[in-house]
Structure formats: C-alpha cells, structure tokens
Length: 278
Image (cartoon, rainbow, N blue to C red; front, top):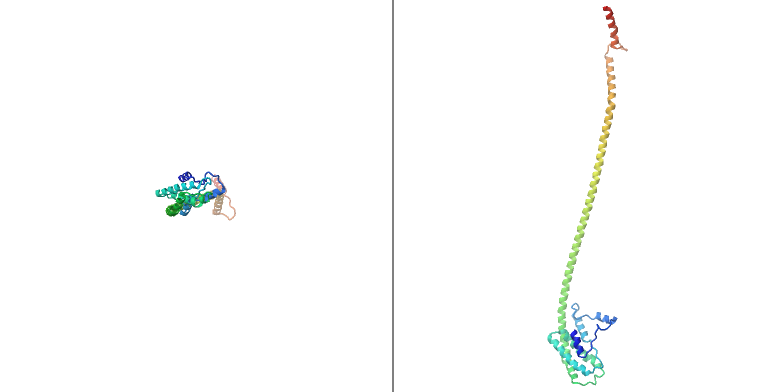
C-alpha cells in the first residue's frame, strides 16, 4: 500500500495519513472500527469494505485546477489496469475506487469544475462508464472469492488449533486428576501406616504392662511362700515334740495318775540290790 500512496502523491492527489496526524478519540475509534484488509481473521466482506474505504480516502485541493486532476486521472486508470493484468487485485481495486471517488464524488465539488472543458474530461467520463465501474465490480467478486478461501482456511486452522488445545487441556486435566489421586492414595497410605505404628506401640505397651504385672504377681507369690515356710517349720517341730511326749506318756505302765520317770523308779531298786550283796 506504500506504492499506492506514493503514486497517488505523484498524481497530485492527497490522502489522509493517520500516522502523521495526532491521535484523538475519534481517530482511535476509526482505527478500531476499520479492520485491516490483510487480516485473514475478519470476514471477506469486511476486508473488501476496508479496501473500499482505503480507495475512497481522497481529498482535493482547490488551488489545483480540475484540468490537472483529469490528466492525473488518466494515469491513475492506466496504473489500475496494469495492476489488474498483473493479478494484484488489491492495488487494482484500490486504484479504481480512487478513480471513481475522485471523479464522481470529490472533483464535481471543485469551484472551477464546471468551467473546465478539456478533452480529458470526456475520456474520464467514458472510462468511468466502460472500465472503472465494471472492473470494480469484477474485482470485488474476485476479492470476495479469494478472501472467502483464505477465511475458510483460517477457520479450519482455528478449529484445528482449538481442538488440539481442548485435547491438551483435557490431557492436562487427566494428568492433574491422576496426580491428585496418587497424592490422595499416598496420604491415605501414610495415615494408615501411622495408625498401624501407633496401634503397634500401644500393643507393645500393653504387653509390657501385662508382663510387669505377671512378674510382680510371681514375685509376690514367691515372697509369700518363703515367709510361710519359715513360719511353719518351728510350729511343726513343737507340735511333733508335744505329740511324741504325749505318746511316751501314754505308752508307760503304771497308774493312771502321774508316775515318776524311769530313772527315778529304778534308782531305789539298784541301791537295794547293792546293799543286799554286801
């Protein structure tokens, strides 16, 4: 499009240059509202409309005579025809739109337009009817066809990218879900191991406590048994002695009353036998 602007300037035409003007709210709104004709993401109709607005972006200078504009118009139509033959549909469409806009909309409002009678004027009027309008319609159809193919290809790529993105997102969700599941299982396993460890510790403590109780009972029984044996031996000896004495007393002949011991009874008899022998 730079070539278009340069050649338009050479032809004595003035085009609005948004880059040289200060940014205002209205200019920003225009930039937002008008899509770029090279943007394949917009619809074909919007792209053609953007080219039409680019072609109609012309202003005239009252100080330049209409004769000069007519002569420049002949050159403009010639360049548009060359672009069309080369297959450069966009440049051809823009130049034909500039040609139509200049000589149908802009130049008739020039103060000297009606006083201008030059041969080029009739040539321009003839070119408008026989060339500019028919070719502009033809170029519009070709551009719509071309942009429609580009738009369909773009949408297919977009749908493909969206499908791939959805697949990646779904795959990522599955990975995240699996990670959460594994983390949950590990947490449960850790809690189970901790619970089992605490349960084993409690069992060990209970077994140790029961063992201590059993040992205490056994030790207590042993101590009690030793004390009983120490106490029972003297009692049994006295009882046996008493029983033996009682048995001896019962087995000695004599009166039922108290009888002296044997040595005391035998002693007078021994003395008597000794006297008699003398």
